[in-house]
Length: 168
Image 1 (cartoon, helix red, strand yellow):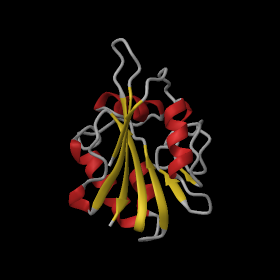
Image 2 (image 1 turned 180 degrees about the vertical axis):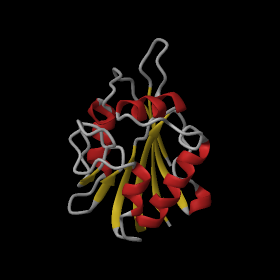
Image 3 (image 1 turned 30 degrees about the horizontal axis):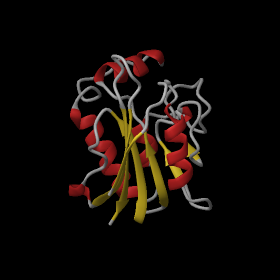
């Protein structure tokens, strides 16, 4: 497994952070179908979704509903850059006039999304995950981690942690 640590300035738009942008260029093969259920403004995925209608995504659905609409084992890669904390989940939902439920702010929120990612990815497909931990999609779901990128931002800022995994 490759592990790297590269300092960079923070940004609310994960995919604009230089070492993350470079990781995506290296890991996302052209000609393959990539999806992003939390696309924000700068996702390089082909099929994009973001619950916030002001984002430049093709769809504006709840992430779980978006993933459930995709056929089983039909995509080559998934970018998984969800809100990193229950507070961020609540803020995103509030911005679209929706109140976050106990489910939305629990660990189960991430678990059910990861189950859907496992379902839609083809065998040999990649999941690239971002957050404040390196759990990724997980070994128990049949994924093997091949790369970890740690992006420290200095001061009191949390590092952005990136994992690359292959579905076995």
